[in-house]
Length: 203
Image 1 (tube, helix red, strand yellow):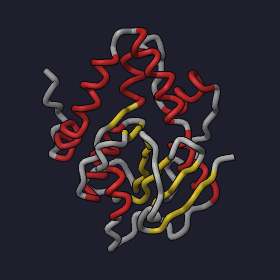
Image 2 (tube, one colour):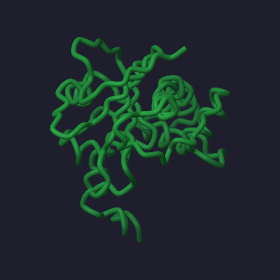
Image 3 (cartoon, helix red, strand yellow):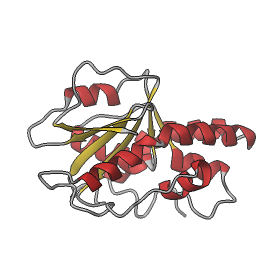
């Protein structure tokens, strides 16, 4: 069974990490500039999920140190949003980054959907419950259902990366994926400057 740790304001000091951690965020909405960051989830790849509540006045030094450590890969699903939101609210650039959504779109062109629920079902045989996705993440206390939902968003990303890396290599698109991942901080900057609509890459 996974272990879920709720942390108020920052990660505990003294934790050790492997070569990669899984990362996700929960916010009050999907507007990068308006809706505040409420939660940052960290998965260690060994069944532990740390749910860091972002509280007013907390600088989160341990969390920031992890997210900016260039020796530790950060695995996201739809990193474009999370990287931008973390930069806006915490003032840091998350790197290096891997995005399972981008990887899936590059190597699973036969698939009709690339959301986390679809990926977990297709590649891992795991069914995710997404009922809490739009719940109130700014509440004073996280419900057990919210905790399980938030943890599930990071508990499977290491395993998905392993599966997707095999497919990326098989389809000859691993290098292209790495170039896309490296561009994500710049893509986040464009989104924060409202260059998402219209997209500067559109006609």
